[in-house]
Amino acid sequence: MADGTLVTLTRHLIEEQRRFPESRGEFSNMFLDLTLALKIISREVMKAGLVNILGETPDTNIQGETVMKLDRFADDRIFKAMDHGGHLCCMASEECENLIKIPSRFRKGDYVLVFDPLDGSSNIDKNVSIGTIFAIFKRVTEPGGDGTLEDALQPGHKQVAAGYCIFGSSTMLVYTTGQGVHGFTLDPSVGEFLLSHENIQCPEKGTIYSINEGNSLFWDQGTKDFVNFLKEQDKETGRPYSHRYIGSLVADFHRNLLAGGVFIYPTDFKNPRRPRPKLRLLYEAAPLAFIAEQAGGKASTGEKRIMDLTPTTLHERVPLVIGSRWEVEKYEEFYRKAKAQSE
Ligand code: P6P
Figure 1: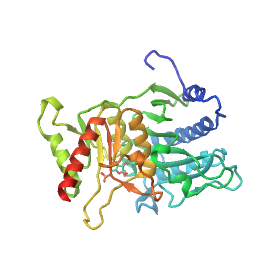
Figure 2: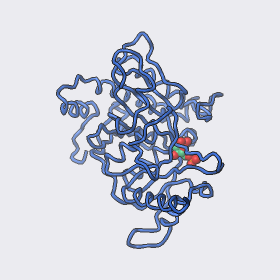
Figure 3: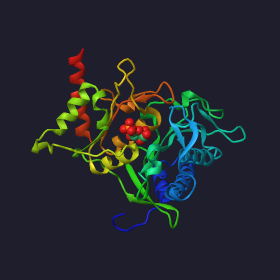
Figure 4: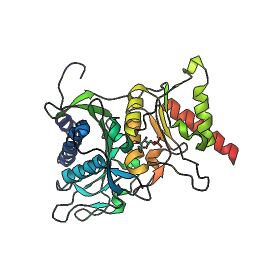
């Protein structure tokens, strides 16, 4: 922190818990179990080039993507850290086609964890920043038994917590429980996440846009119009914007959260008969949307608020426009105008 005070994540969770006198500490214990997995994943990611954990497995996941060894490692570490604490009734992972049951020998709890264990797989063996994304819900079915899809398929505004852990020049956990957004940087020498970014605020407006320009032929008209607008010269609105695109959602989102700007992954019309968004609603768009809104930003499909969408399947994909309020609202203007003109 700015004044040099050392605040660990454990201390921060205890302080947060004090806001809820009726709290039994379930959430805090569950969250600390998750951070143990994140520390172990960080250790392996940071030395990945030195041990035989890079490269691909012979498997492909539900998304049809090749499962990288580190993907599988991260998925396995999170499962083993979270399956026995008695806090969860079920889990869902990008790496698993179906809902993940809590082993019958363990107590079923009141929470649901959904996660992308290591997003940015294609960058893993190129030493580019990658990250874990997660969201936590309260179960909606009767307590005690196994969780069901009903417990996992909840709209973003029902999230009780959301966050990501970025494995880059440092390992940083950024999370919200609806009381603002806070960043903790891992000090590997003591194995503690230390508060480094208290109450993160996303700038109202930035000067960066992040999108895969290589797909521009396949964008909808609204996206094309908006990106062309950002490339025009206009001193008053700081245009033309700078283009920054890492191809790792957590890294692109994190930079824009701190510096301001907008990340866009629109629906891809490469096959006009099968328009295809790429990013997943439940464990990518919605958790980051919770963080963006808590930091004063916005997250939209172009016409709908991400946090209002209820997934119909675990791996449902959505178009995502997320970041500073000014840019997201401007994108929505262009998107709606182009859609109206096409109807
Ligand atoms: P493209 C990584 O595979 C990922 O899911 C996100 O992390 C990233 O934002 C996006 O895909 C990159 O996709 O099509 O631009 O390579």
